[in-house]
Length: 210
Image (cartoon, rainbow, N blue to C red; front, side):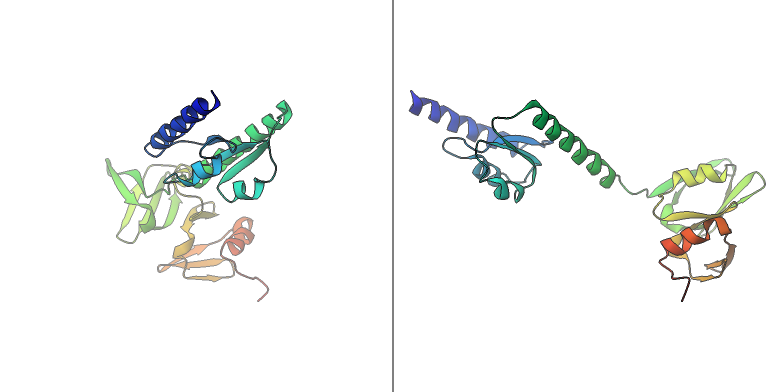
């Protein structure tokens, strides 16, 4: 009876392996002690390693588990409190993944002369608010649109752009020179408010004392 059961479990493992290799899975709960092919062997046979929670009645597999993309290692018998802690680890893992997997903004649309125009974000170096309009200066030309500066700022990747004045946003990578409270960027001179000066120096990694 035991031999028949083990053969069924091995057959089930092989079918599971075939399915997992052809679908994308979020994470895997995997018992290490399985007949025929143990959990670690099963995981190593996959074409890609999914985030995995290992379950085992032994503590000796811990190092191997975390060497193979383990989110957590559960030791049996398992308490509800420990299982809840594992679930929180899984949630934290996927929350971090969402942050790192957010695609970088490549383009934005603005309305210029009544037409919606796509602008490449990397071409924008200075954005200026004037009266009720905003002017975006790019490597090609300037575009004027009827938006608030905040509206434009919310459309841009925060890691690349910074508001340096109530009327100006700049792309940090385009800055040519910083002299005190003045930025020089692509032939333009931009004032920096004292409110933003410390943050600007910090983000550009400028030591103000040298």
